[in-house]
Image (cartoon, rainbow, N blue to C red; front, side, top):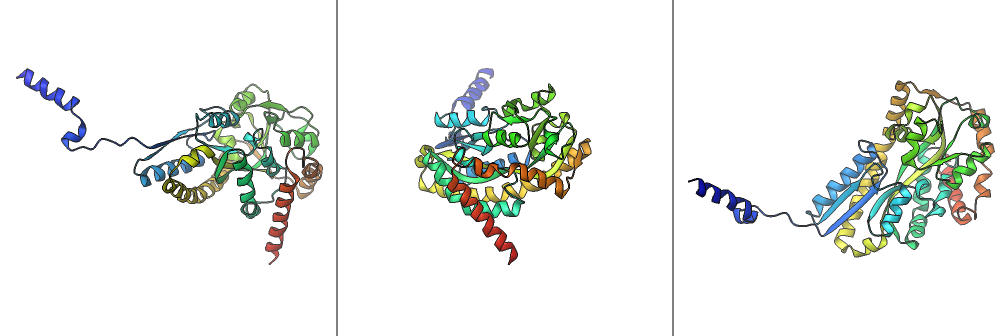
Length: 341
C-alpha cells in the first residue's frame, strides 16, 4: 500500500501539469529589465507598479517587466551604461542624473526657469518632440516625461540670501555642471560631489548639510535627519523621463509598441496625478517631523533670481545648445501670453 501511495505522489510531481488539466505558464516573449532610483513605497513606485500590471495583463503574459528599484542597479549614470551594454532595456531617470550622457537636457535645470507647474506643463508639451529627437540620435527612445518635481532648499541653517549658502557644505550630484555654476553664482566655490546613493551617509557624517531637492525626494532618500530648515521656493524644476534603448524598441512587434503607447497615457496621468499631491504630503510630513519651513520674501527671492539669471545665457553652447534655450524661452513667452487671455 505504501508503495502504491509513493508511486501516486511521484506521478503527481513528475507528470506535466497540463496532463491534469492545468495549463503551464507560457514563457514571456519579451523581458524588460528596468532600473530606477525611485524608492519603493513612494508615489513613483506606485506608478511603475500600475504600468507593470497593465502591460503584463494586456499582453497576456507575453511581456514581463522587472523593476529594479531604489538604485539596486547603481546610480543613474551606471544604469545608462548598463542599458548601452544590454543589461537593462529601460530606466527611469532625472535629467540631472544623466547629464553626462545628455548634456543638452541640462537647459531645463536652470535655476528659477519655471514659475509653477502650469508653466512647466505648457513648456514641456511644446519642446517634447525636440527632446525626443535629441535622445533618439543617441540610441534611446523617450517613452514619457515624469518629474522629481520642484526643488526647494533643505539645510542645517536658515537660507534666505546668497550669503546663507556660503555658510553650508552644499551637495552637488557628481559635478553636474548647471548645479556647480548655480552654486558659484551664489558664492559657493567648492560644492561637495557625491552620488545620490551616497547622499544619505554624506548627511549622516556631516560631509554635506545643504541640498536642493523635492520634498518627496528628501523623504524617500531618508536624508531629513540631517536637515533643520526648508526654504519654500521653486528654486529649480527637475524633470525626469522613462527611456528604453532604440535597439530594444525596434525589436518589439508593432502590437507591443501600440500597447506601450497606451501604457504611456496611463503613465502620464498616474505620474503627475500621484506625484504632485505626494510632494505636498511629504512637505507636511517633514514639517511635522520638526523641520522649520521658511517662506522668503519677494525681495529675497528677487536677489537670488538676479544672482543666478545670467547663467541662462552664459551656459548656452557651453553646457547645452542655445537653440533649445531659445525654444524654451519662446514657449515661456507663449505661456505668458496665454495667461493674459
